[in-house]
Length: 614
Ligand SMILES: *[C@@H]1O[C@H](CO)[C@@H](O)[C@H](O)[C@H]1NC(C)=O
Ligand SMILES: *[C@@H]1O[C@H](CO)[C@@H](O)[C@H](O)[C@H]1NC(C)=O
Image: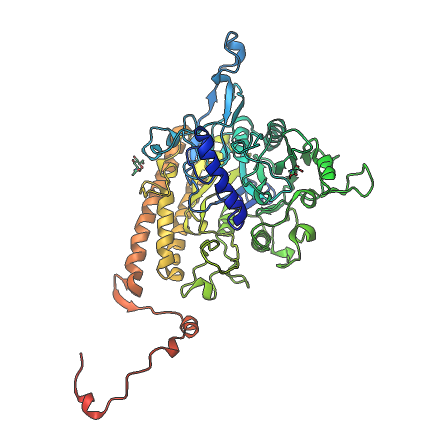
């Protein structure tokens, strides 16, 4: 996801186009109606097989929405389609041989229709007020597709193919297909899903997504250039690739796309935070670089790259050529990249400051970690608000008396101009996941997703297995406008909101303790499944995950009650002590003028003192 709310002009434009759309093409309106842009801004991490403790390949993604984001996770079944040759007399282009392409919708409900998970079925009560999604086009279907986990993007299939996504600025923006002049068919969301359906290696996924985008056109998440590019980290059980894409310039090329991919060194970790990271591209090294046909000629034609020696492209820098730099504010990207590397690769001693992130290139493409990492290290990074650094968001007056690291969206609510620091942990994260692929195990249990619905600092990561044959309703219920206690997302969201209002620095300790206990139980579960001589499959894998997530959800609902009882009305209440005053931190009392509050009562004379007052 990109993040477009700071760009009030483009938001206005989005709303305007939406209005035009409602009036002129009502049948094109996808289920959700408003906010095609979704909401946008995500952090991605990666670790290669020689950078992890157990030799797994891992990537992460946080899906950072704006309150209307669809947090539901589904499992799409494997399918077989009758091939054309077995139906020689079929009408060409009949439905069965086509794979419909959905529009880019990340708001609730991201899809209403059949074939992609039960929660999307038009007959579900939460879909009652929405119309089925109208496809924006179609491509030829294949004979069979793999099963995969999906949300706003596909993220793990039954062959251990994993992905994480982050929207980026780019030099070129083209209209979405439902807008005037919109001709490109593919958003990154659908590209990721088709790769999940058809590929068992990262290289296959990169080439397939690139080719489909070149053939049918790619459009970005936002109407403007601030979110018109995309990045995916794509991995299989052996290797990981960074994939960057942007639209092609319609003034020069037919509807197409520009893209590049770089293999990440096996002993490295990598961070992407809403800006491209691929710099120099070695066009002769196809073991490590893949790219679109017109990548260089389009950059030259656009005036964004001039080779020092004509015809010699060895000094081509993809980010310099095609990125529009950070969006939202300076440090919107850079702070997170710095913040993540400080936790994973502190030996780099990266500078926290720079002049211009695109042109200075102060941060590496990828780096060797301080020590080999685990999925739990990635949980920690996703929960980071720069503790114990000059940017610690739980400190100072903006965090209030009780150290709240979250900063609500402010733009458009006030005439005061400014910006908030952007932490990696984000209260508006709809879900985050760490995908883990392990080459030495059968795919069904080797592929594990650590899924955390809700903000990372308020979630409990739970394991899903690549070979499970279904997903629990706890993961597939999540209408932001309607509380449903079946939903683990609602349980996490509810608890974090309660904690934020109840002495956060104290109540969050209850959340952290519950996280730590349940995530350690979950690690035991994954380890039991992984070391079993006869690993469970299909339904039993699904059941193991379901039993665990149900336990997590129930623990979270009771956590809310515990926090309320313990901190109600500013008292500290436990089973052995009722109503001890907790007050406020001294620094805060001094800051808000407590010492200058109403003075002590007027001095009493002797007579009055004898009167007992109650
Ligand atoms: C294409 O050309 C038109 C007319 O000059 C211009 O307004 C538009 O911005 C161009 N599009 C891109 C993507 O550069
Ligand atoms: C809550 O979710 C359950 C599915 O687990 C569903 O049966 C029920 O109808 C939902 N309730 C509401 C109010 O949507």
